[in-house]
Length: 435
Image 1 (tube, rainbow, N blue to C red):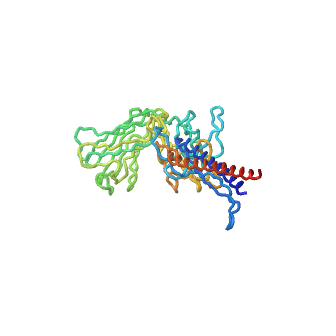
Image 2 (cartoon, rainbow, N blue to C red):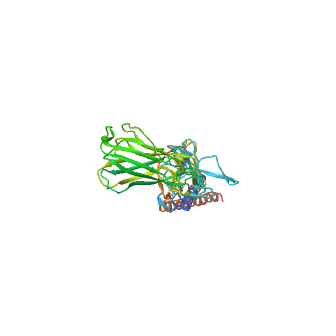
Image 3 (spheres, rainbow, N blue to C red):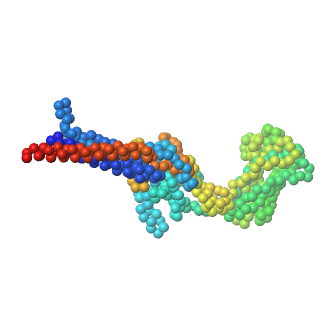
C-alpha cells in the first residue's frame, strides 16, 4: 500500500510542478508585456491518514496566486496619451464586439486594466495596445460639470470649436496722474461677432482735470447709425464718494449708446455699449474693475499710460488640433484657435480584493464575487492611485526571480520522476519474490 501511495503522491507532485512550470512560462513570456500582472504558484498538501501512530502519503495540488496589486516599474513613453497608475486601482475599459456602418458596439461587461498605452484610433476612441477602449466620465462642455453617474468609452467628436461673440472686455491699466501733453492715451482690443469675425475696439482717454477723465469708445466696423460715444470717469474723492485715492469713484455723464453703472461700494464699475457688425445688436461691457478697488483701472502717479492687460471673452472659430491627458484624469481636446475643451475625466477604479479579479485576454480583468464591487474614484482620492502622464507601467514580472523558481521547479520535477522510478522498481522486486 505504501509503494502505491508513494507512486500516487509522486504523480501528484509531477502535476503540481508542471502547473508551476506553466505559471513560470506565462510570466517569462509576458515579462515585456505592458501592464501584465504575474501569477505565482501556491502548493497545497492533501492528507489521507496522518495521526500519532501512522502517516500514509497523501497528495499535493496547486492554486494560482495572482499578483494583480503588485506595482510594475513605470517607464517613460513617447506617447503623450500614455497613462500609468501609481498605487492601487485600474483603468475602466470596454472591449469592442462589432463594428457596423462605422459604429462601434461594446460589450456590456465592464473590464479593468493597468495597460495604459492609449492612442487615438481612426474613430476617435482612446484604445490601448490590447484593443481595450478607455472609459471616462463625460464632462459637460458648457458648464464643465463631470457626470460621475455615467461611464462610457471616450471618443473625440467635437472637432470644431464654435465661435463665441464678445460680451465683456476687461481692462487693467494705470492712467497717469500727470499725463504728458500731446501724448495720446489709448488701448485697442480685438473683439469677435457671432460668426467669429474679428473687429477692433479702441479706447481713447482724455484728462479733463485732476482725477477726471473721459473715455471715448470707437468701433470702426459698427454699422449702426448711433456712434458708441463717451463716458466720464472720476477717481478718488473728486468723485464725491468715499474711495481711496487713485481708484475709480464714479462713472459720470455718458453719450451715444454708452451706459454706466452707478456707484456702490465695492461694486462693479462697468461701461456698456452696443455694436452691430452685421449680425444684429451686440452688447459689450467694458469692465474697469470695482469702485474703490486698486484692481482694474487706476490713476496713480506717473506721466505715461501703463497697460497691464486688456482681455475679452470672445473666441474665433477653431478646428481640432490635438488631444491631451492630465494627471487629474482630464482628457482635453485642443483647437487651433488656442482654446481647449475638457471632454471626459478618467477615474481610477479600486477593489477590496484586486487579487481575486478574473483574468481576461489583453491584460484585462473582470470583477468577481470575491473581488468585491468596483469603486470609481477621482485619481488620488480615497485610496485610489495617482495618474502619471506620458508613462506606462511595465510587467511586474522579475526575470531573475522567475529563473530561480524555474530551477527549483525543475529539480522538484526530476525528484518526483525519480520517486516514481524507484517505486516501480520496488514493486517489480516484490512481484519477483513469487518466482
